[in-house]
Length: 154
Length: 154
Image 1 (tube, one colour):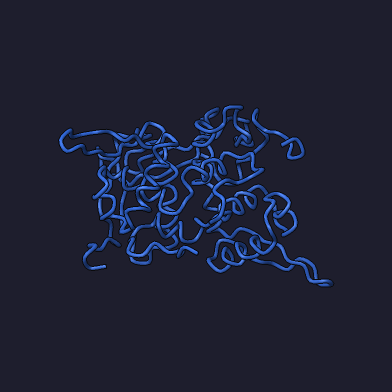
Image 2 (cartoon, each protein chain N blue to C red):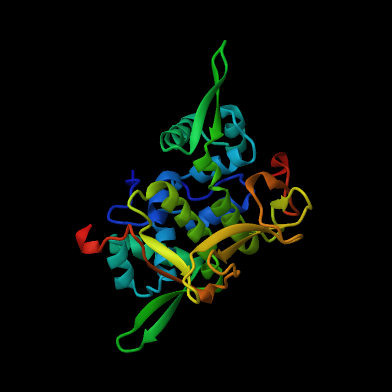
């Protein structure tokens, strides 16, 4: 089996993928965002072997994305809920879904995300927190941040 | 080796991950977004075996995320450029990076994305295309779209 970590990558994308980049993990998070909570619901939605699902849930709990909560005492039953950290995956997942909708959904989007109040379509935008402008691709640049280290010093 | 497809998942997130969810693929796209184009540049950045990198590049070209372009004739040399489709992965990647920055970067963000014009920090927001409101988590709902099919009919 391939290692799960991206050795030598001092990068928040790589670290995020170490937590949620494994096969099925992001689809588990997707299902939790849509309100599924119980093992059997998740298994029915994903159609995967229970050992694979159990493994993914265990890792997502260990990394703080999900919480395992007992909702019944006799017999003991547990459900999985997204933590605040897990809920924050909503934005990258919606953005990835819309990318798939545009390029990989010839029959149209399987799922629509809309504003509950007015029914308007939800769109992800890059916004400048300084001047408030909605940014186009060419207006963005990256530079090393405080957590940067030179590759040679890694 | 695990299959790469998510059988039975009629979902744009699953389809997106079939194209870019494989190990290293999103980091290749990340590097291309930062301006790397040549095989040796990518290999130096990623620190992976050349056969793995060659395989990922080949798949990203086959799926339309990258283009392979000859930039020198004798000897023939090629570079990789993001297509428009590939460039559109910027938003989900920036959102994933910020998630990692918030939760997995105790020394601070390794990389900052900013507005080239004013230097302001870039933030991804969910906006309603109907009423223009910036949306909070609780204001979003999903429903089946035109490409939906009932699981039993899949």
